[in-house]
Image (cartoon, rainbow, N blue to C red; front, top):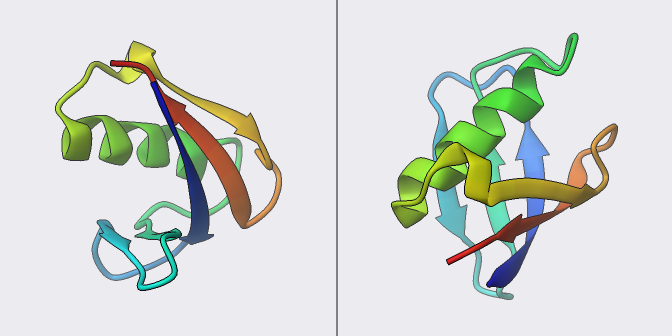
Length: 74
């Protein structure tokens, strides 16, 4: 199990997940931050990146903000 510290940028041109030099992650999400759409897309993006099911990815804190703690179960 790993916990990622993510900074999320909604309304991006493409959905991209990349690790920064300081160990945090930057997630650029196409979806707008409306009705949880960006969080859904974030979970799908993280799951795809780590090769796990979406059910194994959860937002532990920061669901309403740009800085999030996301937990990935192995």
